[in-house]
Image (cartoon, rainbow, N blue to C red; front, side, top):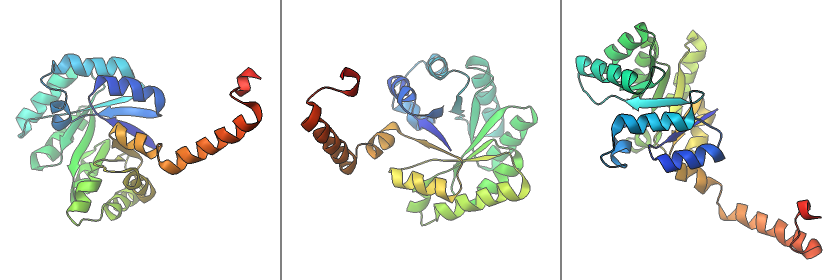
Length: 225
């Protein structure tokens, strides 16, 4: 399993890459908007400096047509670095862009996936990752687990190198279901992971252990005995 942070906030990235077993950072125009009118390329290079090249960095194009998307991709690769995963929405133009980028050997993440057809086409076009939108699919009465399972089956059946990078979550339960359905990776906002580890039952158990310990040894910890 791979966990990626779906944020462009530098402080969050610094903090949570030290806490969680993170394998990369994803962003999109909406996430970038949350940071205000930043110096875009300097900001993305700073993210790279935080995570290093051992972790993946995914940056999305903003143009809507083939030529514009390719220019966006070229600019990102030139002004950030050549190892960036170019995020491309799976539209008619997007599929053409994915094919073209993969023909050149670039890293590609196919995004904005709401259907099996989109995922299958992106796999065949060579995408390294496909990003089905779990919560948004669910809101559209599309079964995200069924779609993810179908993607995983096709990857196994035909030997695609593509990984399923599930996205668009509202809670940790959805992430668990995505992994159980066959996703190899998930990108999520940090607060979802934090909430999963701050459930009242977990904290109650830790408090009980602490009270039992202190009833015998007081406030001394093991390293102080």
